[in-house]
Image 1 (cartoon, one colour):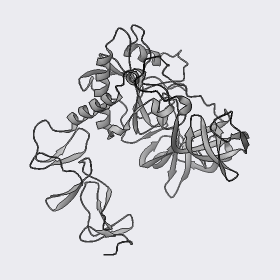
Image 2: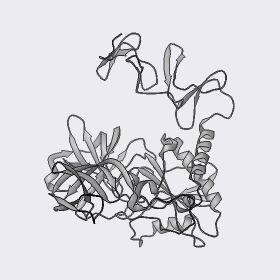
Image 3: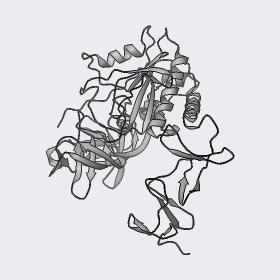
Image 4: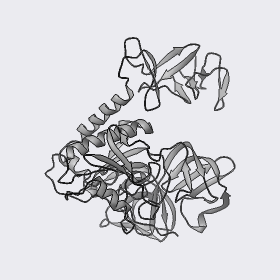
Length: 433
């Protein structure tokens, strides 16, 4: 089995006078889908506490869990739900559904029945290099099921990359803030080269108040080949610049949640708090960066998370300590709206910087959750005003409509095995009209 590194917590604990009660790590709980490989018999506990009663012993094998409490995972054994601690011989990965996302594989890979690098899970099939649709991922492992090939494979060091993803930017500014790249080299402890499609943006504070500990110093720390720390992040922001250290479409080690969503599916941003810098300016610069990322990556404000959301760590410590998280989110939403809403009045179609098409009514309001007729075609605007594409739209009457890749309602054709009539309607078998 490959050597696995323990994903360390990046941000140090600092002491502040809190107006927001921090979550203690031992109280941290989250639901999800985790696959667990137990390579040695493991004791089970009645509760998520090592001091609780020992109930039974879990045999070696692969198990599923749907609830995590700190470093305990709820599993079913002997017909009962019990708690498994993440011992060194217990490997845990969170499974995340993908949307048949296109990926290019640059070398042949062996396929496995489960996402663990052990011979017993090899299924005897080799996946040749090429382009594939990915249906789910488990941190560094990807799942393919295209009718010809089926199974899990691991791709590291840039051996596979999701298509149509952003790695870095070419412009010297991001929304008026100076920006540059200082991408670190591949390494096991900082940049393993696992591809991802970002689903979240995770906010950290550096917990480093030392003079001179600005974005450049932290970027240099990541670039230092003698740095053996198992931690990394994508951006560092201070009061005058943004420095990118990791490609946006690669996993970094920052969230303290092991091989789960925080590390595996989110972009990490560190906000500097050096004593000789202006934290409020760094705060505002980060607002601009996050708004830009939300627009580019087609994410909503709900995708912005605290480090605390993934592991219970008291981070971003300054923002939590000063009770400014709601202010932070509000400013991001305002900056995002400034990006996608036209500066001058628009009537009709408008394509914003996020790539989506919007439609503005004659009174200047955005069309939301409604159909728009344009020429001979009909288009559906969703609850956020975005034109839908490749999408089924349901009505309460049991009727279904479908819009294609250009957003047009389709007629007289079959989609996903469902026949759509000349009115653009597919009636489900439950429809009684």
